[in-house]
Image 1 (cartoon, one colour):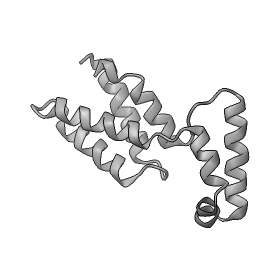
Image 2 (cartoon, helix red, strand yellow; image 1 turned 135 degrees about the vertical axis):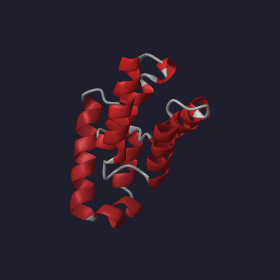
Image 3 (cartoon, helix red, strand yellow; image 1 turned 90 degrees about the horizontal axis):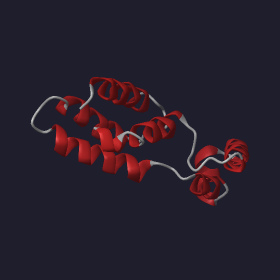
Image 4 (tube, one colour; image 1 turned 45 degrees about the vertical axis):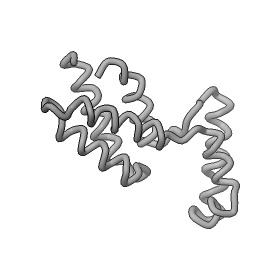
Length: 117
């Protein structure tokens, strides 16, 4: 793998892992991938990591639906859920396909390079 691409993906992986909105599964997959870089298990861990990121990436429509649902309101509280839904609608109107939280933003950046690493 190109050194610049590797450094980029590692940087975005650290951002992802330190994001409060990153799932435990994505953090574990990210750490496993970091541990495997440069080893014989790198290719297998890369596939697992990419699969996990694709599963965790939140489409903006799903975010809107969730924050307007009973479960979303229960999780975030009515005011926060409403604010997130309003924000999600605004970014969707501006052309966003995915949530723009730090974890999703990092995941998108990593997945854009998935064919290169």
